[in-house]
Image (cartoon, rainbow over all chains, first blue to last red; front, side, top):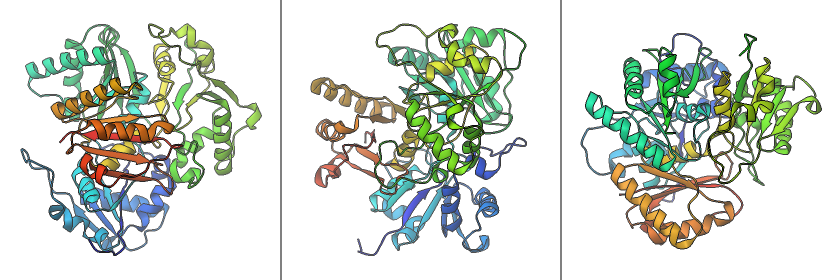
Length: 257
Length: 257
């Protein structure tokens, strides 16, 4: 390691309106001005998607002028995750993306929505940054998981995010019953997500497999004008269903009675 | 239920600088302007602590003028949780706090730091609001748990927050080994917190009971100028310890190798 000053890896939150067609808030409605200011000056970015990052930087520029022209900003995409790969990546493997920080310049990490590295790619890059001795700073912003949990009224003293459930119907039913038993045993809220076009199918599976008294919460379009959060017993959901959109992310949470 | 219009229960994020003596950011550095605007107009609040809520509202007023004088704003404290109480509270029990919303006015819920109802009181009030048919909206802001998780570089696709560990040394050691086994089996990051004056004791217990290759992350002073996040193997922590403050909250995260 050289004694040269190191740059910082900033984890920059994106808005939650990715894919939304209406009710989209202004950038300063959902991101702190301090975060927009940092984003406006960063010369290097590692992104889940370069195109949406350019769109994000245009929204930044409308609030705080970019320190350099958009075309001059260095945006590189994260490598796609390789299925079945073993072990954590070595610092060497990530060094092209971290090179600017290793020579003293700041780098931003951003995903298409919400906080990078949470329910999103990027954690391996952050881990590599720690292994390389870089400073890592996560900037505050919207997280659909935590907003959904807060809005659910379910247990926020103990909770788990388990990602996606299996697609196969039998496996998914078994996983739902397993999560309900875990929730009952640990009194732990279980949060999960689904690809938007399968939102209705996941809701139907949850209603089919969960007990009547288990509380089920759904949050949809968080931070959008037309977003909503509903918490009810499984029996209540069955008695009065709510249609879910097929084109927006939904966070599902359950707490066994 | 009457057909009268209902108010909204807004979950308002607070800053993460509660108890900090230095490095405190300006309000608009960490909260979106849209959130500050909502906070400035709310006539009713339910608070973890009335005094810190008045201090928060003074910071709001410095950015966006309050719609009414501070003395005219209705601030009520959440009842302290009663240990060992059974069952969820009935709507009746919470109705004095929700009464303004039931007659059509908006109410804010706020805790001393971060998002209300997450690792903080308030979830029971949110649940009662859903049972009463009120609209619940969680506003975006900093969450120490999610910022710590993002900054850790540990697995953000599956994670659990388990709150506080037992104080008794033997029970705590057993719980740490249980969480490490769970983390290995589910490949799930486990997050926990501690009362600040016991931060060092928890770190020592984690280093004593976790395997050498387990990755351990600590985030301290999130959003403060002098905050830091460190992720290393347990062996790396033992070889080069970092002192933790005894007066600031710390989030601990672990992922078994």
